[in-house]
Amino acid sequence: MLDRIFLVLTLTTCLLPFNSQAEEIEKKVNLSFGTYALTVAYVDAFINDDILTGTALSASYAFSNNTAVRGSLFSLNHIDYPEIDAEGIDIIALFGTGFTTQGFKAYLGAGIYDESWDNPTGGVLNFSGIQFNGGLGYNWEAIALDLIIGIRESGDYNNQANADTAVVSSTFNLSVRF
Image (tube, rainbow, N blue to C red; front, side, top):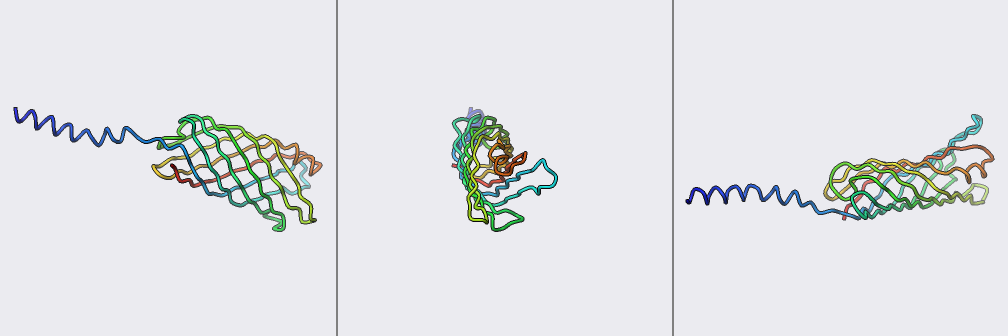
């Protein structure tokens, strides 16, 4: 009889750590800092592409493991013309998997962007529109790492440059998870 009690207690004690690991706490909020890059590629081969790089602060909230919303504030500098600065915001709704749990995550989304470029001639150029995004990442218990690529509507860029463009943004973020 004592052998059976000892066996049951031993098995129960051994299984407790596995039960606590199975009940992982979902973390819904990410606060991020990272790099942000923007490329405006011109179809005309005689116009040099505009490439801007800088930093971004982002926050995201996951409604579930499959849906989230993310907002980013970014500040950029032109790599060829340091006197050109840009700042802006983008907000995207994301659909995928792995937003709240530990492990890999993958997602697609759509949203809006709004940015302003300080022109060296003293003017300000404004760009806004919709964008489509995709991303991959990994969540650890307290931190996360994400790479997000965005394809932007290029109408405002086309109008400012009087040329056809393709516009792509990318962010690489390290987040604290809550």
